[in-house]
Each structure stands twice: as C-alpha cells, then as structure tokens.
Amino acid sequence: MTSETKLSFGGGDVVFFGGSLMVCGIVGIYFAVRDRNNKNVENYYFGGRHMSPIAVGISLSLTYVSGLTVIALPTESYLYGTVAIWFCLTSLPGIAISSIYFIPMLHRLQVKTLYQYLEMRFHPTLRKVVSACEVWNLLVYMSFTIYAPALALSAVTPISLHWSILLTSGLCTFYTTLGGVKAVVWTDVIQCLVMFCGLFGALVKAIVTVGGFESIWNALDRSGRLNFFEANPNPTLRDTMWTIIIGSSVSEAANVCVNQSVCQRFLSCKSVTDARRAAVATIFPKLVLTIFASVSGCVAYAYFEGCDPLGSGLITKQDQMFPYLVLKVFRELPGMAGLFVAAAYAGTMSTVSSGLNCLSSQLLQDFLLPFQPNLGEEFQKGFGLAAVIFLGVASTFMAYMIVFLDETVFSMILSLKGSVSGAIMGVYILGMFFPWCNTKLAMNQNLSCFGSSKTQEVTPLYALSYWYNAILAVLVTIVIGLIVSFITGANQPSRSDPKLFCPIFDNQMLPRKVRRFSRFGVPVFLDSSRESLNNRREEEQNHAGLNLLPSSEIFTAHKR
Image: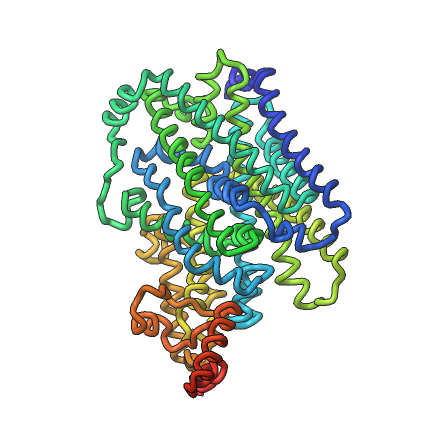
C-alpha cells in the first residue's frame, strides 16, 4: 500500500466516519440511561416484547447484509462475474418458510432461546449441543464481519488493520453492553440509512468515472464475466446460477429460521402478525443493498481492467479492491470515502452487536439457568453484561487470526457457516415435521454439526461447490436422523405433543383429508382462542340434544 493511499483519508472523511461511530455510542448510552431502573432481563434481551416491527425488520435486513456484503460481495462479482448477482434473491424462500412455520412456533412456545424447543421436543443434551454449535458458529461469523470493514479502513486510512479490528469490536461491545437489544435495533435503523447512502454514492460515482453502463458491459464481455445465466448443472463448479440459487437459498433459510440473533428479534415483537411484518420488512433493504454491492464489483472490474491492483502491489488482499476504488474515484470529493467506510461499518456493527446480545442470552439461558434456576434478575443481567464483554474479546481475537488466511472472505464464511447452520436446520426440520424422530438424534447431531467441515480432500463429495455445504448438511442430518430413529424405535405420532409439531399443509381452504395426512397422525393443536370457540360449539350442540365427546376426550381417545 502506498503512502499516498494511506494519507488520502482527509478531514471530511474523518467527520463522516467519526460521526457515524459517535451516533452508535450515543444510542447505547441513551438506552442505558433510560432503562437504568429496569433490571428486567426480558427488557434487556427482548425489549419488553413490544418492539416496532418496521424497526425490527430494518435491523434484521442489516444483520443479513453485514459488512461482508459491502466488502466481500463486490470482490466475488469482480473475480467471478455477474452470476454473483443471483445472491440478491436467495433470502426470499427463507423469509417465507420462517413466516409460515417458525415464527408461529416461537410465539406459541414463548421460549427464551431458540434451542429450548430442542429440549421440549428431544432432550436437554441436544439443546446444549446445538446451542454450543451455534455459539461457535456465530463467533466465527462475527470475527469475519469484524475483519471485513477493518480491512476497508486499513486500505484508505493510516490506521493499521490490527487497530481497525480493535476499533470495530470495541465499539460494538460498548453500545451492546449498555443498551441491550433496544440499542441494537435502533442503532441499526440509523446505520441502514448510512449504508444506503455510502453504497449508492460510491456506485454512482464509480459508474460515471468508468464511462457509463456501456463501458462496463463491454469490459465484462471481453473478460467472459457476463455469465448471469450460467446454468451449467455441474455441482462441482464454484459459481453457477443453480449453485447460488439452490445452495445459498438453503443457507439463507437456515440463517433466517434457526439463527438465535434473528429469532430473538422476532420474539421481541408482541405478536405473530408483527413478527411476520418484520420478516417482510427485511426484503426491500436487503435486496437493494445486495444489488448495489454485486454491481459495484462489476464496475470495479471495468475500472481496473488490465491493471489488477493486487498484482500491481497497490493492495495486499483481494477484499481491499473496492475500498481502494472508492478512494481513487472520490479523491477530489472530501467526505465520500469516509461515508463509504461508515457504510461498511454499519453492516458489521449490526451483525456483531446483535450477535453479542444473543450469544450472551444463550450462555445465560442454555448453560447457566438450567443448573441455577433461582438466580435473581440483577445477577442474570450482570452475567449478561459480563458475557457480552467476554464474547467481544473472543471475537476480536478470532478476527486477528483471519489476517493469516489467503481465501476471499465471502467464500470462507459461506463454507463454514453453511455447514454448521445446515446441520442445525436439519435438526429443526426433523423435530417440527417428522413426529417419528426420537431422542437418539442427540449424538447424531453432535457429529453432523462438525462432520461436514472436514478437509475437502477426503472424498469426491467434497468437490461440490461451497454453496452446497448447507443443503448437504441438511440432507445428511435428516436422513441419518430418520434412520437412527427407526432403528432405535420411532416415536408414535399419536402420542406427540401437537404444540411442538408443524403440519406441512394446514390451510383451512385445503380438503380435510389433505390436512389430516400432512399431520402424520399427530393430534390437532388447539390454542386458547380456538379451544374456547370449540367449547362454545360443543355446548350449543349438547343443548340441541347431540351427544358429542368434548375436545379433551377426543384428544385422549386419539392417544389410546
């Protein structure tokens, strides 16, 4: 990196960048002061379960996007072409699945963590195993998201990569510790605006500098990067339309449905309807931001065509490519480079702050309270604060380790996260949709969480594109889980607790036979409102002289 590059981050850039960081700290302090007399753990982790669905949706969209999108996704499209743009659409199936199945289940059970369901459905051991897998998974993911904007900052300022990492993780730990989930959500709303402005401004200026869309198109055509409709079905190819759409859709579905940081914010909404509104509210911001980031990589290729900045020694990592481009095109416009770096930080701080908040909740609810259930509210909140600080230090240390890796950030994180998240997704599918699955699943899950992350030279199966890691983990977990269950003695569906089961088709417009078949013999679950309506109907029918069994006796007879 040349000295010119380091010194080009001027006074205007410092104002924009420093101002965005200051706002985050102020929000954390505000909620710490406002809720200083409220020692309720429910308020710290769930915002009293009355959070605005629009604010929660914006917060979730920024968590999905993260700093990886601003820094790493342009690198993917720069290196591998327009096929990377398909990534923009892959969260839609996960949002639909979450809204139909997972959100109603979470609100029905009113769990503190997502993994309490596994204790109810299977065994306490499985709850701890899966929660531990997710703690490790999220710590690794946060370390990557800390590294990405730190890399950007080190590319355009005199601040070294090591100090950039420390600044990122330190600020996130600070305002998350003070303000809890309220600070996380409302800071994200402000950061979303910063992210839009930073990415949009950088993209428009770069397009104008390159010479417009025609110049970009011609450059991509000359290099063979106009591969948006690359539909080769070969699953071993790194990036094709099918590998991204299928593989990433499963990975994103796992991220939406079985991610504690996401589900915790769904639970912070007061009802299923509000939580579904929050899920839908994530679509537009994520779609626009990922399109901006993908197209930015194509623009960067047109700008650097014939003079790769890595090969020229202008940058030291591929993921510094787009920040370096921003620095060059905004050389005569003070403040805009700082706004772009603030955009990268906005996504990262959203992901890391929500991760710290949810992981401290997991450590408290899944590992401490099962052994010490009578701890007071003040002690629980104090433990949560200490856990946030500890986890912040741990993620900082792990971010330092990434400096020594050679792959692009995007491929590394999708490979690792897809394997673990896919295995966890498989366990929830077994529990919610397959009533035969029994508690012998626990050891199987322990192996499958880590089994799919082994070295890729052991078997030809590992020659598959890294996009397929998640779907492979889901399928392996489901198949082995069912085999183990039937060998060791499958559960009887008629004895299953209906509140822990989700029929695949449960729409009242469907024929009764279809709905009955989709339950696989599990009794019908009646919530309090439906049960009271049913009781009124029974009373009316009995009054009319019809001798019918009460609903409770029907359920008992069904179990017999």
